[in-house]
Each structure stands twice: as structure tokens, then as C-alpha cells.
Image (cartoon, rainbow, N blue to C red; front, side, top):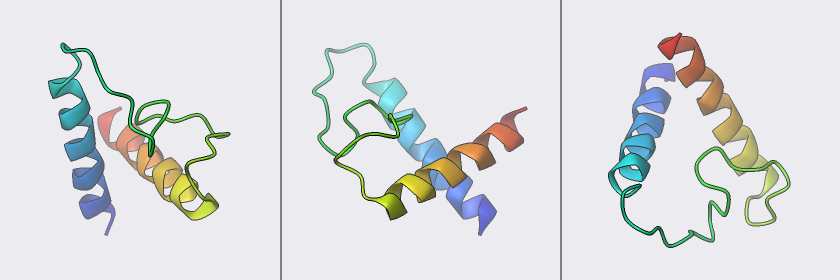
Length: 63
């Protein structure tokens, strides 16, 4: 479970790094990028919680 969440988020990070050299079109789903602002209107509460938990998992794995 935790491993699959980490792999999924790592995939998103790799995707965002791969396009960082080009001018990015801002995604309406993540208007502030992967580490989105908590006030983002495009994300419902459940998505915010999933993202927040996933970021915590990445932080604990990467440290």
C-alpha cells in the first residue's frame, strides 16, 4: 500500500521534472504544481488528503 503510493507519486514527480525545461501549461487539476496550495479550489478534500499523505510518505522515504 505505502510502496504503491510512493511509486505513483514518484511517477508524477518524474513527469513534472521531465517537462520543467519547457514552458509548462498549468494543469487545472494541480494549479500550483504537484505540491499544491491547500486552498486550491480544483481539489476536493479527499484528493487533498491523498496528496498530503503521499507527500508525507515520500518525505519519510527520501530522508
